[in-house]
Image 1 (tube, rainbow, N blue to C red):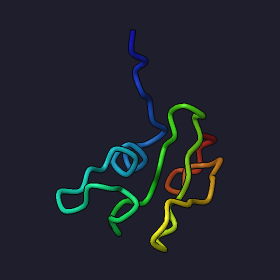
Image 2 (image 1 turned 30 degrees about the vertical axis):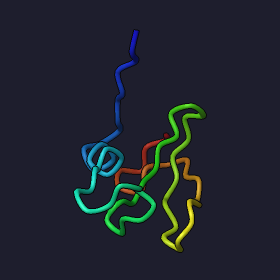
Image 3 (image 1 turned 30 degrees about the horizontal axis):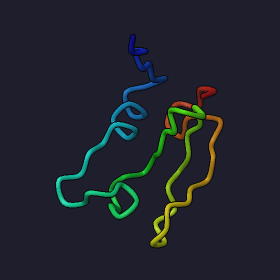
Image 4 (image 1 turned 120 degrees about the vertical axis):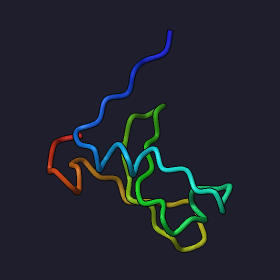
Length: 67
């Protein structure tokens, strides 16, 4: 049974589920801002430096809700 995702605001939903038409890997796309690791349930802001790193966040950057 799949778990339904819920988001704190529309901006978080949009940016977490963004799919780029030009880049296969989300870490290569400069328009992809947020990564959501479903397994560990953490959110991070992607660092676009050619790797797959990010800065973990505990609050939504748009509405301030606890994640």
